[in-house]
Image (cartoon, rainbow, N blue to C red):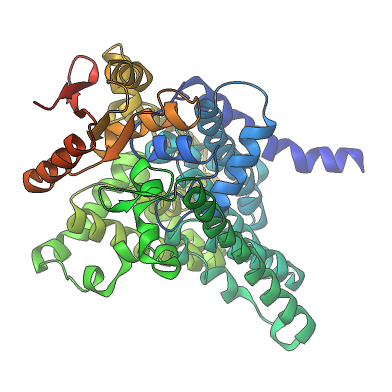
Length: 479
């Protein structure tokens, strides 16, 4: 009994420890700009994040930062992402084993997949995509179990419900595991239990109005004509649109935004763009082996194929649309390329299984090539943390300098990418709360002129926080 349990735990444990060790070696040490800085500033104090609110991440992050005794709040949230992805690796090992892979190949495939450059970069900072990957792998595992064990349905429904309380991109993955369901539809009791377990996690969304009401009571006034909690950054501006628009991320998913169709040349270039993204994650060797893996899954593990192909196509299409619509890259690609990692692991196993010594050596060579490629790509791809280290400054340094330089009761205007470290120092470390840090469109001269005039009317000194190649950012007084 003990040896059997040890055999079941050993390979998932290896798949957990190896990526976690790599993530810890490259973990971001402190507060970060942009969305990561927002999570680090608002999760410890129970703020309202940008839409859709990520209540599951908000709840787990707040609990973890309270119970884990070491490090700053910013570092703890960076660490939590590493733990989520490492747990995802262990879950993925179980998924491969469930689909008939030998345990060694399950472990190797999971480690290769969780060290893809995009997921790796998302796993060493405070971000939502590591938890998204963990939930995705859990959906795949339970979808594979559902083929032979209908009792997995309630747990699958629970994971699907938790996914609905996290990133909306997981909607692309939730339906497909349920396709393996066969006989449970005739069991009314199990069916009702599945519905209840699917819906019960949605109560986590109640955290958002509870947190919002807390900050509206604490800051009941207005600044610049907007609610003070929104201007100061305790509550996302998207919350002003109402609960349902906020939860459904209406600022991104509104019919007006989604009805814009890319030109034909953009649509035609999307498959090539996906292939390039795929090869940039796994190398050309990985792309070729993935094609072999698709064939093997079609022959041996159709359930995993049915779950990964739609997820890859939908997420890749939405990622391309988002990049075209908003002219910026997203972490959605991390979710799309995870499907491709499953195909690669399948292709490597197809090369090895029942093959000659030459084929076995070739599969080992492919593993080595992909691993080296991932390590090289991680350090080559843009990373704010790597750039700051290369320039010998960290966001904390320029955020502290900006707050120290600002006059008492002044207002600092800046872009989203720069202001969140300042808010972290204010909200979490309680430094210079007399200063109002405002996310503002610095390029809109007319609007900015209006805000600056209002500052002078309130007798508050206005400043602009602008990028600086030497220090990261610097404070400039408005004359």
